Image (cartoon, rainbow, N blue to C red; front, side, top):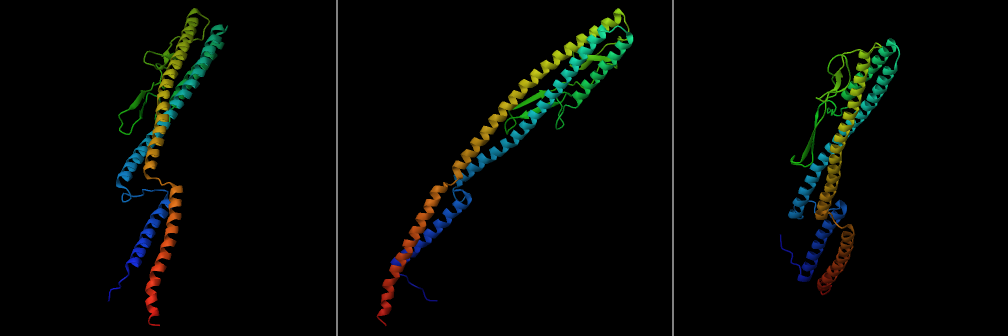
Length: 287
């Protein structure tokens, strides 16, 4: 096969058209994907830096999800404490009514109501967990704040699901358990029964105080998690913004580049036509 020799003007114009076509393909890809760096071939440094930023943003996004679940766990415990506080307040009212009662039967009925509310306090504590973690059931809630697991918060709950003794009428003991044995029954109009009712009422007041104090502790821990969640959300946006700055294409600029390339392509095609016309003139010599 014989070689075809092109004149220098034609060869230069063809090379220009090839370069324009290659650049057009690049610009069209940027417009289609929105990325000026879509692979390591485009810009290895920016590509790998952006990948590192996006990977960290993904890791933090997973931690943000766990923080959101931790917040819900605190909220569940807080709702449980509020319900238990209402039950304790009702128990205090029942104790007062029992103390004012004038018959043994009435006092026995009040004691039965009191005991039922006490049991419900235990039931509420047992039902205040979420995703297998119950801060009112003695569980530990650990929340990680960074992808390396260095910064974290571990909160140990209180176990208010059990009671001391079968006739535990109320409240809290030194170990933090809701319920303290009160052996003396209320069902009599005697000084001993009066003392038992008053003791139960005092224990209820202590329980309410302890519930409120524990709510404040959980509230403080919850604040920490919420602050870190907001910080993590902002960090994710910052990391993604940094990655975008390294890889995203300016659509307006790329559109203008494509229009300029199309213009150059048309001009180069006209130049090629002019360059070949001089060669075609030789044919006229044989006409």
